[in-house]
Length: 506
Image (cartoon, rainbow, N blue to C red):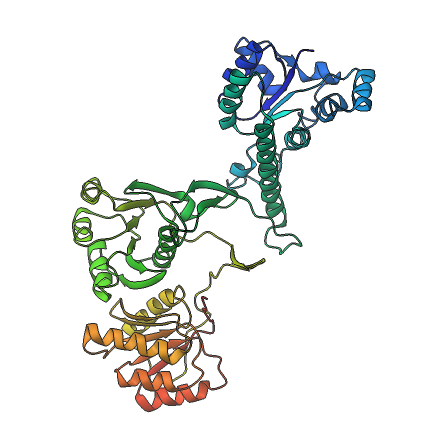
């Protein structure tokens, strides 16, 4: 009996050559709509699907393959006599190959098209045929990815048929695809709800050399339904990215994305070690570098403006893993490429896009909306009022402290982060660390401000800050002992602002 293949593809890449190969192998082609027209226009002999179903396409093509003559021919178990007797009695022909790729819902859901237009890109017949064929993989070769045409061609040339293992793997790829496709549709329709079942849809972008450590395997996946800076970047130079590179890149880019003015952020081991604003990229980088010239070595630098020649020359004076910016002048790119291992990353999206974030725990996953807030109010709670410069530095401090591991303390002076206390188990330790680091660089903290990601449970942090000359503090407030911190500020002549919002980052 002559074998038959059902071909229905949105993406026509490679399908002409694959269909030609099947025909040479004496496989009869059945096809639908646009695919049928494409094959016929290119001189290939194909049977239109309506000739198989004895029913024309209806409802603008919504119904064309949902028919017993199609699914019976796919789902019949060849070794089951009852199945085959039924197929024969009903005049249904067996289908041995199913080649289908889907309407591009992944792509369309990210566009500015209307809700109704996006709904029209939800494929029904395609996933149904794929699932039927994948269930019958012992008898049916199913292909949902254009990259697999060559695999099937090679096996048929070598062995005359497709192996069981390959059929099984191709079937697995179908369910992998359809589960992600359904997840994307579910998330699109349910939007911000926390559904009973968590469905996520990510596509592998590339394998990584290893994970956090060399003995851990790793890969990088990007969302199929949402835009975002870490799926939109282009690598212009340097060796391949690692697990830690991408995570640190993400943090650095999120920090500079908080600023409208020119800003630079250096990150080392998932922690900002230098952040500054300036009138130009060179100034912003120099100020960020000088915050901690030791930690920035081997770190990642992000700047939210185009990098020019002068800045590139300065960047090349030390060892950096990554430089990331929205663009580079031709001269700057040529200079940075002189270091063959320096990863130069161009990133088109500066503002964070994610609405939901996930944290994996053993046997479970935590889901929360992304922290997109900054300050609810700027409430001065002390006798002393902050100066305009102190207020500006307070805002800078909060933009940075939001991205520092809790307990988090950030010291800022004149538009530059001077010290970071991060990840300590109590707030006084974080405060002491940030202050001591800052004093090493400045000699004095007179005129500097202190930003905290959460309230002070005791007045000890205020008292410690006063020893170093801190004159302004910004924190969320909300502690039962707020009055003690306010009283301490009044005693030391320190101004304090409450923001009304906490920024824990664990």
